[in-house]
Length: 356
Image (cartoon, rainbow, N blue to C red; front, side, top):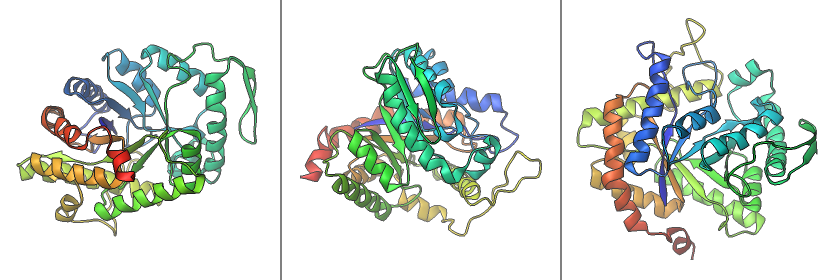
């Protein structure tokens, strides 16, 4: 059981300039390493303020030079938006630049807004993603590879800068498609899942889906790590908690508006924060999440881990315009008290013991 920092790099308004948002992302990465987090993860989004991180691999390459031990990952690279040969070559380069610390998170995407601007079909994204799943291991494991599919057509080629990790960096798949989850289990790739702002019932539902996927392909899942993306915050200061919850709600509202194609903007860039019919009160959000005193957060996270049995928790550390200095102190708190207490409680065998 280890913990990462998920860094979305959001811009809630023009009071945050883009340079500061990215600088804060780098600063959180450095803090994550100092605090004892095992990973830092970078999102990919385009053309609006939902996230200012258009290239997770560039973030990994840059932050590799600012750190020395923390593993650095994409969460996730939206593969249908890439030119496949360049993407494959850059994986090897980034793993080399990071001295073998790359964790390769990949997904098919969900925001029509982005796909339209790349001239790519969201309706075909799943099929394109599956071809990438074919070709990535080929390119990184074989000296010479070629691929001829419906979407990807690559002549015999060789990746010049080979990955440091043998045979390749770990792959993390994010998907809502059960067939792709089952393929990840079958091929031994890792999975990222989330309950968004849902509570224990949502987490139980996630576990049931994973169990059904494993049963469908006849595997025990031992070769697949489960990563759980989660909002969490420890404080006795309710004003701090409310600020974190407000920013989590901001993220959710923008995500829904992009997914449902209802986003609104006055200047073509900065999206309005539109209330959603499924909005929850801050009180209900706090009940659903590991948010509260240090002891409560520890107990609640242990409860969630016992239900889901993940191998990795990715904590959302950068949301909206939450105060940077306060978040850096929060990350220190997790590293000093919360993570060690959870690791001591769950031990290395929570996944196996819960499944027995």
